[in-house]
Image (cartoon, rainbow, N blue to C red):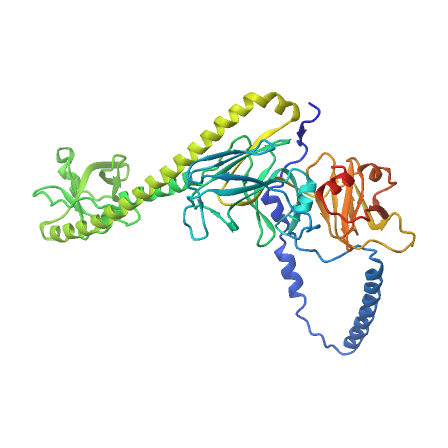
Length: 525
C-alpha cells in the first residue's frame, strides 16, 4: 500500500475564504487621500527635489538590476505560451461514428462516454460522418509544464496553486475543422486517477483569458451532475404557476342564496382577480345561521383549501366561522365574465401545452444522459472486476467529469505557496565563475515530490518552501536553457530559511532541448 497517494492534510480553499482578499474600503481610502493640492509654497519645491532624487536612484537601481538580475524579476509571460514550442504535445486519436453512442478506453485506463448525435459543426449541424476525437492527459507536472497551461487560480484578489488529481484535454475534429458539443449534450470522462481523497473541485480552463473557472465539487467515482434535472424542475414550477392562474369557469349566482362581495388580491388569487364584480356564494346554507349575517365581523376574508376549493372565513373576537363557497356572478356581470374566461383560458392553455412539450423534450435528453451513465457504469464495473486488486495496490480511483463542451478540465485542490522557510533568492549557473552574474528568467517552478502540483514564482524576494518536503526547482532561462536543482541537491543546500539572501546554484543544460524525454531524463520525472 505504500504507493497510494492520499492527501488528507490539505483541504480545498473555499470561495468564501478566498474572497477575504477583497478589501475595497482600503482601496477607496487610498484614493480619497490623493485629492490634495500639489502646490503649497516651499513644500512644492522640496517635493520636486525629492522626486528628482528618487528618479535618479530608481534609474541607478534599474540599470544595476537589469545587468545582474539580482532580484530575478521579469514581466509575467502569458500562461498559454509553451516553454519549448518545438516540443509537440502528443494526443491520442480515436475515430468514431457520431450517430451512435461511443465508449472509448484510453491508454491509461480512463473512459470517455460520448452520446449519440452529440457533436455538431460550427453552424450547429449534427455530424453524421466519421470524425476524430483527440484526447490528452496531463498526468504529471512535466506534462503541465510543457503545455504552458497555468496551474494558478485567482479568486478574490488572492492567487492559489493547483494540486491536481487529474487533468485532460478533449477535442473533436473533422479534418482540420474543430467541432463542438451539441447544446444540451454531456460527455462523461471517467479519469483513472493516481490520487485519492475528496478535497478536490472540478475546473474548466478558459483559453481566451488564460484562467480556470470553477464548475462544481468533485465527488469522485462516477458522480454526475445533471443540469437538465434543474431545468425540468424550473419548467414544472412554471407549469404549476400557469395552472394556478387559469380562472374558474364563471357561475351565475343562485337566486335566494347567501353571497358576499369581497375584493381579492392578485398575488393571492390571480385566477379570480381578472374578473370584475365577483361574489362568493356559500354552498352549505344549512350550516349558516341567518343571525350571523347581522353580526359585525372583525375579519372577513377568502381562503383557499388544500383541495383547491374556496372558504369564507369570519372572525369576531374569539368567534371564528368558516363556510365553503364558490365565486359567482350576478346576471348582469355573467356575460362579460364568460368573455374574459374564454380569452384567458385560451392563452393559458396554449402556454401550458408549450411548457409541457418542453418538459417532455428535456426528459428525453435526461434519459439519454442517464443511459450514457449506465453504460459507463457497466463498463466501469467490468473494469473493476478485472483490475480492482491492482487499483487498490496502486491507489487509483475513477474521477468522473460530466462536461458540456470540448476543452481542458482539471480536478484540483487550490493551495497556498509552501511555507516553512523563506529566502531572498538569486539564481546562478553553478559553472559560472563571475561572482555577480545571475540567470535571467521569467518564472521559477517548484515541485514537491509527493504532490502533483506546480508552484510558480515570478519574484524571488521572498522565495518560500517547505524544508520538510523533498523539493526540486527548475526554470527556462532567457536564452531558452533548462536550469534546475534536483531533489537530492536541493536537500544538500545549507539553507537557514529566515529571510537571508541565498544564491541557488542551478544545473544549466547547455544542449538544445528537443524532446520531452530529455526533460524527463534531467528532472528524473
